[in-house]
Amino acid sequence: MFRKKEVIQIAELRAEPIKEIQLQLSEELYESKFIFNINRMQWKLKREVIGDAQKVSEINSKISIIKEQNKSQLKEEFLKLTQDVVNLEQQKVNQIKTIRKLVDDKEYAEKKSKEMKKLYLQSQIRNEQLKKMILEEEERFKSLILN
Image (cartoon, rainbow, N blue to C red):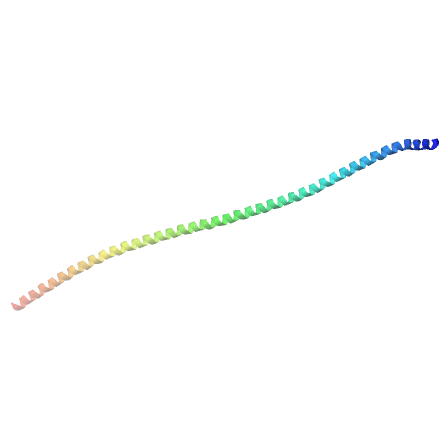
């Protein structure tokens, strides 16, 4: 029995370095599993971050597209408003020209009216003079006939 105990002790002594190696290997296994899990988590996080970055870049590109659309819409509206202002100014210019023409026409009509009145009065005076002359001629003719 003593011999069995010795054999067991010898076996245990021989097994000690193996147990230490086993223990070391199991520790390394746990460390490698831990490192593997950490690496896997890092990889997942990187994927999520990359995905988030892609989403952010997509959102930024959409925002820039919307900004450009807004800029072009504002430019179009500005051009329309500018054109409206130009049209209104042209209408004002045309109205002023029309008013000036009407004023000129009125002044011309007043001038012609005065001339016509003057001519009418002159013709009335001539008519009166002619009537007077005719009456004088008639009276002279009558006086010649009577004499």
